[in-house]
Length: 237
Image 1 (cartoon, rainbow, N blue to C red):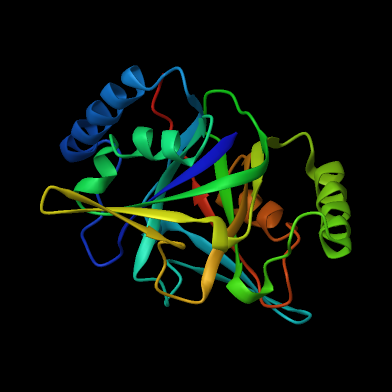
Image 2: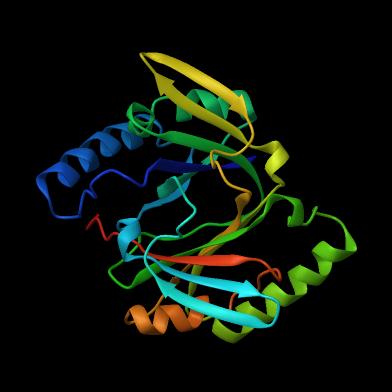
């Protein structure tokens, strides 16, 4: 079973930019984790700071594109992993080794589907699909089938650019891990403190930020949904 592990941290701390000594030190710690957990890692990327993000929001038929972090978020996603494990207990056992627990949170959620990806390059981008928790569509329903058809149309339109992606099970299936004074705290539900939850993601290529935003704006979303565009860090592996 595939589990998405979203790595979340506070939005009110100083960004650690790629190329800085602090970032390189973090990369080394994650490289050690990846060496230990290589057998179950089925994907994952690091993201540029949230200050570089683009948000595409939908309000009915109106679409608004804005630069920068989404104002309501107290914590932001800094990257993710996908684990191919037997169950939640095994996913927790892997996730508890992640450095993200030192100062942030990890949300584990089973994936309905996952399309593996290759090693990210300089032209890779990610869109996180956000929606209100009460608007998330249950897999296997007619509404889910309708949304799946819309996503297939999106894939047919920009398919040459897509490098991977996944759809998540409802937020009720989420488990959040936090480190506190050397103890691991495990709670049910998503990491966020707002009504929004992550509903899926795409990885794709684009030559620049403008072209990436054009692709992200085409991603299907609900009437009150939001797509968060972030550039993927090329770790030169």
